[in-house]
Structure formats: C-alpha cells, structure tokens
Length: 498
Image 1 (tube, rainbow, N blue to C red):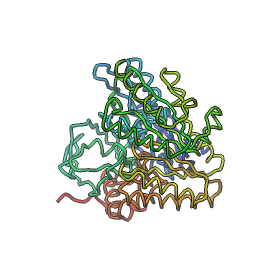
Image 2 (tube, rainbow, N blue to C red):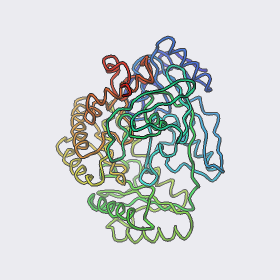
Image 3 (tube, rainbow, N blue to C red):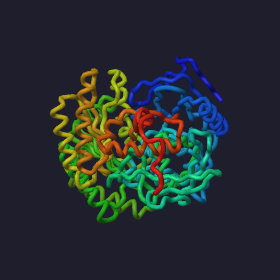
C-alpha cells in the first residue's frame, strides 16, 4: 500500500476535469483488494471521511474531496480475466477502459458501450453509470455490468450479480454476507429519457442497479464483471459538414426516423452533433476542417459483408441528398481512418477543459437530456439563451439521444456567475419538458443545485436517508449528489417498511 500526507503529493488528486479544487489530509493507494478493505475499516474505525478516486476524468467534482482522506483505486489493476466463451471480462476497479479494450481485442471481443474517455477507470465508470458516443446504439455501461464487488464504509464486502436480488415494488428484503437488509426505496420517478441524476430507483428493480451510478456514496465498487461483444465485421463512420446548422439538425432527424423504422439504418452506434462554435474550436487543432454551420458524426456497425455493403449504400444515398459539403466531409472505412475521425470528436471536450484551465474557471456546462418529442423546443431555448447571455459558448453531443452538452466558456469570475444563472434556467426548462438535469455526468459536487430543480426537498431527503442506511457514519463520498449538511439534519434512518 502507498500512503502520502505531503500536500504537494496530493495536489493532482484534488481536482478533476471540472477544475474544481478540493482538500484532503491523506492519500491511500491500495495495491490489492485486501489492502483496500483494511484502509476502509481503519478509516471507519477512526471516523475519518473518505472519497474514492479513479482516473479523475469526471466533470462534476465527484472524486474531489473536501476533507478527510482519498482512496485512489489506480493500484487495483493487475488482473483482467477474459472468458472468450462467456464473452465476459472480470477486472478490478483500477483497470482503464483503454487497457480493458486492448485485452478484449486479443480475443476478438470489445465493449461496445465504451465511454468516450479511454483513460477512465472501470470503478469510476461503474460508479457514475458512464456512457459516451455509442449510447445511441448500445446504451450506457449499466446495460453491460453483470456483477460487482462492493465495500461498504463499515468494511463489509458484498457481492452482487445481476438477476439475483430484486425489490418487491419499492421494498428490498434480503440477506447477504450474514447481514439482513430491509429498506424502502425513494418514491420519486425517473424521467422518460437518459438520466444520471440521483439514485437509480424504480419498482421491482435489480439491487445491482442501485449501486451502479451511485457516485461513490453508498459503497466503493472494487471489482466488476462486464459483458463483452464480438468485434463487428465492419464499421462505417464519418464527419459531415453542413453549410447551416439547421441542415445538420434536419439530417439527424432523418437518421433517427430511419433508425426506428427501416433497415439497414436500425441501431446506428453513434449519432453526434457539433455546432459552429465547436467546429471553430476544433479548427485550432485541425486546420483542414472547413468552415461550416453544423457538423454530424455518425457510426454504424455491420456483422457481415452483405450487411456492410447495404448500410454503406443507404448512408451514401442519404448523405448525397443531405446538403452536406460532400468533398470536404470525412468518411472512414479502415481502422486507421476511424481512429482519426473518433479522435477529432474526442478532442473537443479536451480543448474545452484546457481553455477553462487557462482561464482558471470551473466548468460551466449543461448535461441535459429530454424526451425526443421535446428536443426541438429544448434546442430553441439553447439558441435563445446563447443570444441573451452574450457569453462565449458551444453546443455539442449525443443528439441521437436528445442529449447535448451546452458549454459556456467563461473567462472571469463574473462571467462564471452569469453562466451559472443561465444554466439553471436551462435545467428548469428541461425538467418542465420531462427531462433531466444530468444525463450522463452525474451530480457530483457541482450540480447539487440542479438536482433541487428536478426533485423536491422531500425526495432529496429520501436519497439522503438511503445513503445513511448503507453509510450510517456518513463517511463516504460526502457532498456528492446532496450536501453533507443534509445528512446531519435529515432523517436518521431509511423510511421504515410498512
């Protein structure tokens, strides 16, 4: 085990990509599961708060502590077990997605729902229920988690396998590791769209889904098992540049309708949108990119040559009548070409983070999704806010899921405060349209005020009570999802079963 208390050694662990700064008195880096469990038990015995840290690639400050100790899971990475027949991977929390994919491909397998950031660690990906550019076709990581090992703040270890423990409506009653668990879930309802805001709860749910996406507040995910898929026969993807933003939006509508109604456009893996300002920022890195009003990134896989040829023909027909700049658009059919296109898309959030780091400002971005039927109205409001705010901004993201990342680029503290006020307005409208204030990044420490727009105080109190059931000392992941002050003033135990 590695332990450090020198503040200089802790600095890189006191921030994530949001640029939020934290504080801690000690850092622990366990090298195996036994060391991790021993650290948790010792901190619990001394009543010292602790925060789990992974690759620090998050955007909401979830891994950034405000006090106590940091437990970095980066040392838990020695063992990746691929079962080619079962198409599963067993791995520890400190394994990066990049290393997992490298190992899986040795067996001609892949994780199709691969979140965008390759340096993210598996434990963090599971604890935030991460997704990425492939969410349109394959959903988020939740769909591929088969089992998890969880260490509670008390030092208890519990193993959960999907399909084994379910609630009866909103009530859980089960015995595991010699302990009886009886509790009732919060009674709020999730929106009818992609969402990662607060705890995942629903009637008759699988217990494993309560811990996935709980942002390190209920327990620490120490290891997991993932479902893998065969590497597809072929992939066709590209970047389409359009003269006007509206033409790009109309094209994505055509693709979404096609994905629902006819082959071979069913289930494109990715459908992404980038506005003009996003393209302008990317052009600083990629000077060959044309001046355009809007850009669409698409990706679709095929299982055999016949299917591949059919989908390429269909895409080409749609693209030729789309109004895109055909000569300047980029198409990829080889692995090398695909990597180039994917890196262009991946570079955008990196450039945003670099801009904010230079400006010494915290990330000011919306992570909103709404039901498809209300997306046009939401997008119109993005335009309205961008005109009113008179701040630098850009808008991009997972348009296939009606989920865009509207980012302000503040350069001063006053601009940051103004950006926050407009982001709250965007969140209010999204909730009024049946949407979510956080579709994939979670709430962390930066978006607690947005969660209060989405849920009532009573519903947030129920979340706090659920946390206190699993973490009665209130030591783990404090200030994530809701304020730690709520844990001191809210209900002392979970709503009793009636």
